[in-house]
Image (cartoon, rainbow, N blue to C red; front, side, top):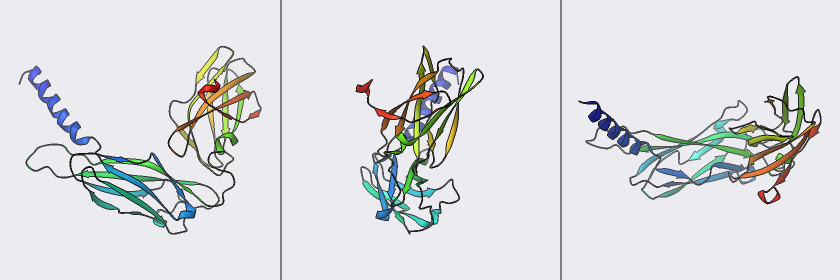
Length: 251
């Protein structure tokens, strides 16, 4: 087979493989907020493909104090007709997770395509993984207030500096798009999002450090609906600062 024919054949195979690896199902949200006072939460799943699929769903946790067995996802396995929709329900037994702060786990929703008879094709089980935030009742404050409660401190260390951010709230704060500005200086600090757990802190290296005595920090926070809210902080060397929200109209 000549190189041109081989290339065309390979491209044909890749096209077939790609068509069978695209996700047919879509989720009704990018995250699940589980309010403990309701004892359950739900998520809609839509099959946008042209064939029936099997949908398998389960929870996973990265922390030892979140007991997955305290939750049940129903149905754990089901057949979803083409253009069909169903509700996944997440049930909570009432124990097995911290009640003094918000916790997070992962909800996995995996589609299993139907077997294609008589065809030599590659079929992939496509998994979607979103965060489930378990929010106990009676926590002080709110998730919407948590970003403004973050404590920001800029400490110089020679020609560099460390930007420390602490989360004193009982809620997770998902940060993205951090950038420093001031005195003809601009440094983009974070390309990917970072989630700050309740009571946690993180140090972010600023390199090189400007000689300006103060800088402005802009950042965004992912809210309960998957959207982004913008905040700004006026930073002063070795002083703790807090953020205020703004909109593009304020800029």
